[in-house]
Amino acid sequence: MEQDQSMNLVGHLDELRNRIIITGVAFIIFFIAAFIYVQEIYDFFVRGLDFKLTVLSPTEIVWVYMQIAGIAAIALTIPVLAWQLWLFIRPALKPIEQKVTLSYIPALFILFIAGLCFGYFFIFPIVFDFLLGLAGENMQNMFTIEKYFGFLLRITLPFAILFELPVIVMFLTSLGIIDPVKLSKIRKYAYLVLAIVSAVVTPPDFLSQTLVMIPLCLLYEISIQLSKVVYRKKLKKDRMAKEEFGMLDPEEQELMEKEKTAE
Image (cartoon, rainbow, N blue to C red):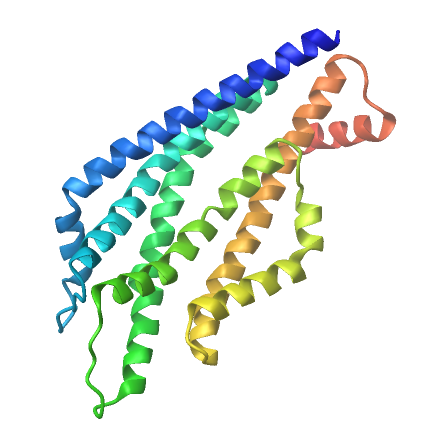
């Protein structure tokens, strides 16, 4: 018995290693492809600047190009990572759970891109213009390419990650790991974390932090509502499965009868 469990564990670890290798290879391929077109990506991000960025060392531009290619590769690798994760946990899922969780894969990619766009097109201009305004006309603005893109990434990446929250919450709810009740109970702690995030990525003024805090809180509330939808469907399916095998208790039986009547 112990030998069978040991072999089973080794088999899972071996499969996990293969999934990680596939994801790593995909990242390298996407990184190379992004690096080939990195000049075009760079030109997109600096197209609206009315000043030229400064380079202080020969390797600085290469390092920035690698950062840009790396972010592009991460975005493109997300569906591959999600697919490999789904393949790894698929044997433990019911057929209906397999179909539901599979639909989350494209949503992860879309929300990551949406978070990047939100951070770049909405938050970054507000923060950048505010900081430039502090300099006034008595100072000359001169930014190195590394400092500029480092600042840009610190502003946009947190939103790309946080925008994944609804899909992650739905996925974990469908697996029964979390539920909307737990999410509601930790709301105040979640808001505290989001307030810290907004304070970190924005200038120290109330307006900028509020502009960031509001959409993040809305994102959390949307996650709770989506969790409720998934949770209700999960409970209904569980009750139907119990009804099929005659395992319903009186309260669940009464609830199912009310649902059928309402339909």
